[in-house]
Image (cartoon, rainbow, N blue to C red; front, side, top):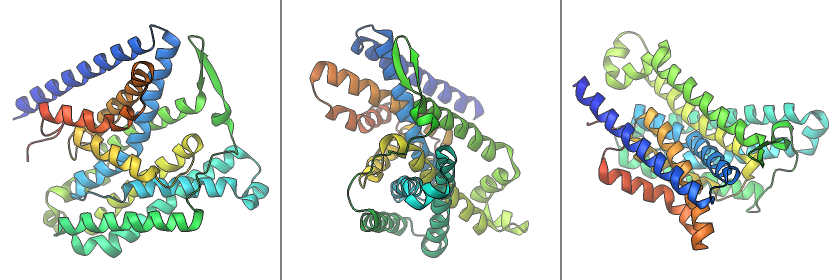
Length: 336
């Protein structure tokens, strides 16, 4: 069995390598052979991929460990953006904390904490009675997403907010191949890679990670050992929601805060999770980078040769369809 799984993973990696090589080739052609222009496209792809991962990672963890497809994940991402923006730009906070870097750090902590608290409320108050009814879970989380979206519109209106109170990373630039790159893009990419490694270590190498995976496989046995499995599941769901809110506040300085960003990122995140393999954390990480690169390359190519920008928005779904035609379980999905 292990040999079969290893062979399947090698096949998946070959597909990924082939797709990346193809996308890089198209990107180089679209850039007209200019290394600076090509570098911007690649960096933009990594940046978008990491933003997607910040939403999709929580979605993948919740589904992979709890079999719950949380349609409110995009709303938590949007909430994180608005909470972070509101805190960082509040006149009273600016007066009390004039240091912009410190204020942004506190905005990240606050937005993540708000996402975690609302995750606990959603799991304990609404989802817990519906663990045996998956269809009701989907309807419930979809309804929660609608309620959260309308609440955000009520408090902040539908007017888009642009981040105006800049700070260190957001203001910085560096040059590569004669082109200027925003330092904040590198910051987001670095945060994404750190998060990939940290969550993988948490799930694979720590005691709580072992308990989480054991609780998923055989909850009765784990409970017999004196471990509160329900509390473990609450922790998992809370982590997933907190990651989404964290992603929103990290994205806000670059994307701003808008009332439609939740739905846009949710659809792309679902495509990423399905492409990588439902419940596969590693697949989600690779799928996020693949989709991000594809979106950037297609946007560049479509603008350069087709004079159309709409292709970039449907690229995640198109890439998902192509991959699922070859591997119906996704790149790293396992046979049930």
